[in-house]
Image (tube, rainbow, N blue to C red; front, side):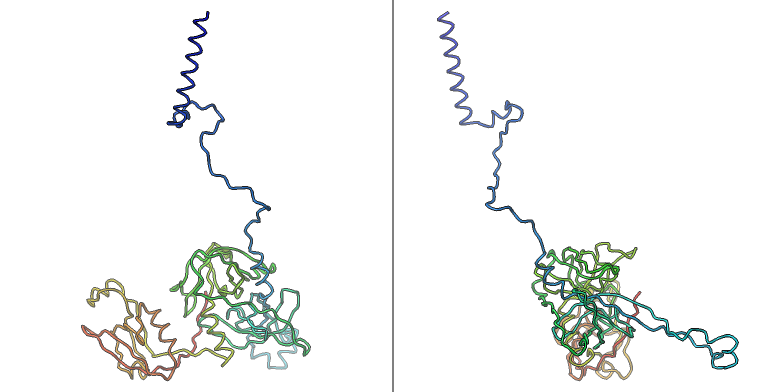
Length: 390
């Protein structure tokens, strides 16, 4: 019996020694026989916070921007076709005057942004197009009349000014303008407006893309694309960053149903500010013009012309007597640069020429046949062209 006890004690001692060696040198071997429910991994866990953690919120940005976003209500008299027979008193006596004397009206709604304590409001041109009366509803419930200062149909922007109420100045909360240099794809964006007329609404998304063009929405396009929900009634409203600064004017959406599909477009504040300042200063926007019709250079055209790539704009037509005609530009030329800046495509050519001041002489670089030609052209003034919106 004593011998058996000695063998047992020796076996236990050797086993404990082996377990100590294995747990020290090869602890992962023990994981194979770990009991169910026993953790063999030691994950790093965050220390308990001293105070309850606050979930990410953009309430400060919303609180900062909301008072500056307004609702715009417009009315327009309907011009009915007049029947010449109504001028005959006998006809009117028997058949009436065709109405009760009241002029029918159509109503519209949209959004806008107060950009100055002087009462200037930035919105879309299509929100106030053709309006005979404009009323502004502030976020605090006040309703004020407004007048149209000026508009720019080619960028779909308009500037309104709130009229004083009963001859007294009205305190107006102006929004803070952001900087496009600080905006990048992936940044958080908030869209504020009055969708479907339900009232002031804030939606959140991110900046999906910058510099969107060739969409056929406006003549001059450089849109911010966002997936923040934008619906009818949001037009003219604010797109703000996570600090509540204005970075764009909500303008259009891509939709097959009329509702938001996560693809919305806003005019960047850099473009909107330039247009706004010109309208306030002069009542209109002045752009350069030379009188050419440009065509995109496709891969097939590039091969036929022997071009290394598709950069540039093919001049398809030149208006007789225009600055381009006087300066020597001919159909078939390929415009390569304007004032030293390269032309990527027809839209880029349009933007570069429009940015020139009328009356100035600007250097143009062209490719003609197999050579490069330089021309000096005196820039003309572009006549605003209204673009029909579908």
